[in-house]
Amino acid sequence: MSLQQPLVTVIIASYNHGPYIEQSILSVLGQTYPNIELLVVDDGSKDDSVERIQRLQAEHGFDFQVQQNQGLTNTLNGAIARAKGSLVAPFGSDDIMLPERIATQVAYMEGKPKVGICAGNIELIDGDGKPYPEKKQRRDLPFRSLDFDDLFLDRKPFPPAPTLMIRRQALEEVGGFDPLIPLEDLLIELKITHAGYTIDVLNVVMARYRQHATNTYKNHRYMIQNILKTYGLFSDHPAYDQVRYNFLNSMFLKTADRDRPLAREIFKQIPLKFWGRKTLRGLVRLYLAPQRSS
Image 1 (cartoon, rainbow, N blue to C red):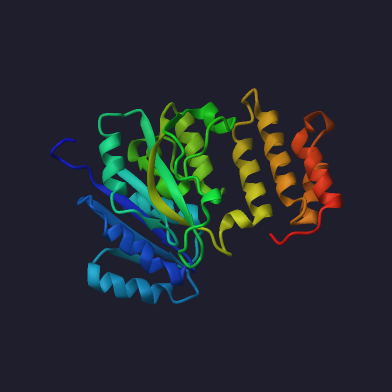
Image 2 (image 1 turned 90 degrees about the vertical axis):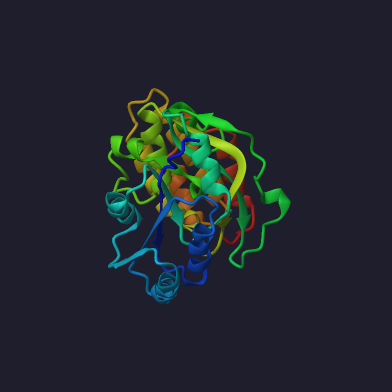
């Protein structure tokens, strides 16, 4: 590594994560890498997040701003405009970084200008911070380098959102995050790889990802709308229809015994020629399986 260690800006957009926000901030402050700018923005929380963050700020002196609710992508873009780092790591206000994470990523990205994003593996934890059983974990996924088609066609495991470190130059080249699409990670990954960069995912556990009742991924309707919007931006790709209907088939199967009205809506959108094994399994779940909680 060069003597001049690059500045890394970590951005935590906080929204109603009072029980978790302190752990998230402390995990950034506890990094072994010395050259970090921490920007924390509270996006109109209605719980006690602001008070908790202010107590930590008084002790540690990081940059903290409070704003009326603007949504995640607007908040990230506002923070990036102020950021001084050449590498940017957006980080969830309910997740936990492992201490060597930033140092590992900076060392890897050094001298690799075509790596637009570096990521790593995660450990899944519940709302209380307890690890999920081993069968649910994906800690040991091997190293992978993803280009646009790898992501768009779902050919390799996706980079986990809590581990993304983004090259500032690549972020600016693609115009930052899209304020109209709140699910930020998939679109920024597609835009950056579409611009010719790769996403390299290291076989190193870098963060603990908290799965709990308020995770966005549990709001199926919201997630489907935003992912379809994201894919729609690349509708000129020859495999677009296949990608769209593969995704709808997956979501049909996932919701068939959890949210039956939504599953029926999804099913109506899948033409017969795009039916597959997941469609048939979904139909069995929809009409024969007992209802599960989402």
